[in-house]
Image (cartoon, rainbow, N blue to C red; front, side, top):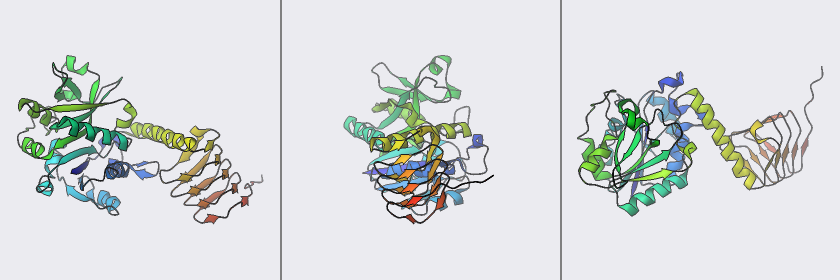
Length: 333
């Protein structure tokens, strides 16, 4: 059995925004929903979302989904956040997957591989790691003589030698539930931040002689955490590229892919041709063989097979019949 905890209580101070960090949009959807829908692809028995800062707004976004929210009134670290779910998982037996609500690019296949390794190794904890060129700001993975994970040290608490390590903690873990909540009772906020670090559980597992496995991710873009507006823009760049490459494999032509904006719910059929400076938003569907010329903005529109949308059209809602040709809009000066 599998339970999923998504950590979504933080304010996100570096975003410089009045909104909770996890509600900022990526391809038209809140960051949190990207993470949630990836987690749901694993078909977990339970999903809990830890909320805190402006919890009412986060709960509103989650209302269409069959998930439970758990309030973390004071944000005292990742370990403290997970502690808040103890009573809700008291009767649960199985593995607990912990995800960060601000890491939206992680793929379902990655989580499936992580879970498979965890169960194959019969580990108490399995950590998703990655080797990155610039590890600044991330917790470092410190391995022992046998290559097992010994402990994880946070950037602010690391020595110079530990900071030189390029393998980093992504903040994604799978725990055996019984071990997790017993170990959380023992951790203390003895660090620079005065917080309860979930990573301290790793050290406790090793002290008990339990196995701590690690799955090292090859594509570091998947674990990009959104902590600033710059991170958000970078995540958008990566996600747009992923969307377009997926459609290109299905036979969609983008004249200049980097100059087209797509939202997550958009569907494109084979043979579509999309010109530069086009925005396709909401639940827009382009059926087979549709052409959309430059400077068009379509939101929640179904364009039936073979239709032609001339340059400059702005459409919201409705259906464009098969083979219909919409003339370009003209501005006379």
